Image (cartoon, rainbow, N blue to C red; front, side, top):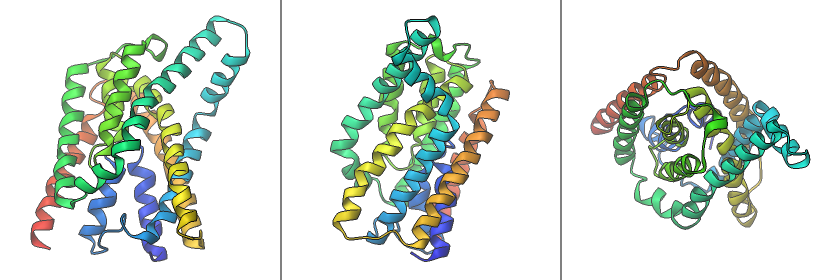
Length: 274
């Protein structure tokens, strides 16, 4: 990958990983549209993938450090009401992570291969938009706070996350949608989604790192820059998204739904002529 390609893909990763618009879908479609070919299956893309995931995971941890500190404190402190609530949320984060770990360990590679065709990914991106739109309509104005989430809701959010292994479906989009359908406010559903994302994205980094060592790949300057860029953009994306969900409880997902539908349709049209 050239330095320019690395920076552009890092910018794309930083935004699309957390915005509910599918980072993997964009990583498949965008290079095809601009004539870069199939970047994500090229061996030299692995170092960039690893550091971009690491940068995003660090951004998530930095933004939500108070939550993770509270989780740690809840394990060490006595059973105060706040500690009990924090420990409960922490256990639900773990519970919601388990389905994707199990499914991803066995099916991630097969799903990426089966759904790696850019045209098919563009179609799935349209489906992602439809899902965001209808979940927003079904949920309406959620009133539930994260403290009110039960284990069934947490597990349902975790199961929804599994479908994000298919390129074109957004991890954050699916989990936030599941959260609001379970009765959470958009802001609380987003918070839980991003707390779940930290171990998942960090786990993806750990999963890919041995392949990096096995291939004898090295982290060059361009790869390091892409990791820093992805992390900074991911942090900025978190700031924007959390403010958006805080101030837009009603129809908060619909702008992203419209984007996915338009982007998917436009990509399909463009791929027919280029």
